[in-house]
Length: 355
Ligand SMILES: *Cc1c(COP(=O)(O)O)cnc(C)c1O
Image (spheres, helix red, strand yellow):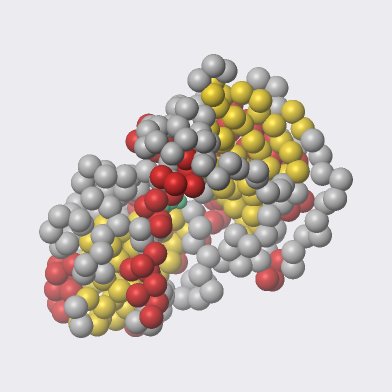
């Protein structure tokens, strides 16, 4: 399939790299690919970034049949353009599609389209430490019918955003509210998929946590509300008694590429590491016994984000004395070093884009 290109005639000025924030600026072009049952995925094209014209009856606007991904492109030391394990994001997007009754797409072709778009927009990749070009693929249902059923037609798009640090706090430890009532995902639900509605449903708890002076929510399991699952839209690790513990994957936890990379790094460093159920009581117990040493969230956007405080049902604990943990820092330095081509890539994670 040939990807057609229509270049913008009105390129935008690049934003000030010191004031990027997260996901506020967008590049000059976007990728668009349509689906219908007769032609399958067809008419792949790179066109000027701009608004969509959607029928008000479009299925996505009513029942939220939509999925997305998040990945980053970096500039290497010689100016080369680098992606991090992008095939993992394409595979996960198809798994999200399967859960949301959206047709499968050709992962190799989609990755080729992303590479072409990123190569075209390479001047938008910021180079300051902590910055990157965020890549947001997403798929929406476009049937103009109000019946509740899978749409027959879809649109796959990719937009790009130069980004700075995800949290204004940067790598400083953040305060986390353990949510006792609302849950993010349930067994048999859609938590393992990057499905748009999961995030809409999480906003109220997030808003309440912010009102209480925290920056994120720690989600508990949807059945007993005892076991930790994720922190905000990140996976979570705790260092307890000399062991790194992260919740084992089930269908209520998003299988993060960062989580998987951290597991591989920790194992290669011979750090004792387990994936298992972990109750919030065990975490508070470990804190009382002095064996809770570090905790962090992890995901593409923030890479790692240290947890400095946890509040649960009126009890408040501090972790790491307000400082980032030693292992947390080493994971951040190693991951970002590999991602930006400044450290060797022993796992073969980095994919170079031809420009
Ligand atoms: C995207 C996401 C993550 C992190 O996944 P990465 O592949 O590491 O970016 C974790 N949890 C949720 C809920 C997410 O949406």
